[in-house]
Length: 160
Image 1 (cartoon, rainbow, N blue to C red):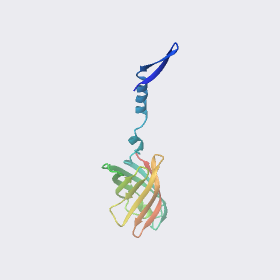
Image 2: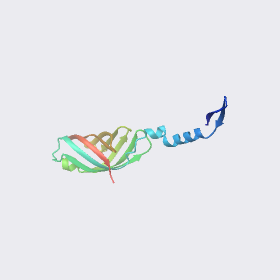
Image 3: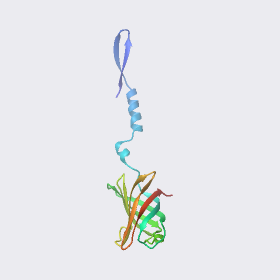
Image 4: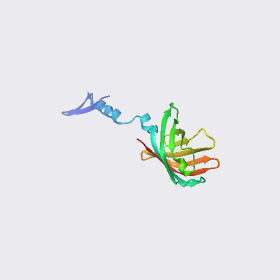
């Protein structure tokens, strides 16, 4: 791609082909502007996370109002929404919930995330649903068990 440049010589206008300038702008645009597929891809949630769960309401016997721990997520396959598996270690026993460590399954839809702690068990698991916020993930969580229930807020921050 090149550009037309007009030059005036005496009283007549002449046009001449001037290669180069348009190509340089096109090259700059290709380097600086993100591709559509790159612009829409949110950062992966794979990796190590520091977990903080605040307990707003609970039928469990524990006294703790906040439990903390870690989780590790690894992407599985290339499906959409992105699917992750991993494990967690959170001090749920301080709040009267269990277990403190188990597997995880998670789905990342880009604008929202759903994480299930201890998904293989029918007698108690936690489900976290949230959004990306300030480099981490935040939202609401619920412990679904028999007979124990708990709800609250969660925050996940990248860990080291």
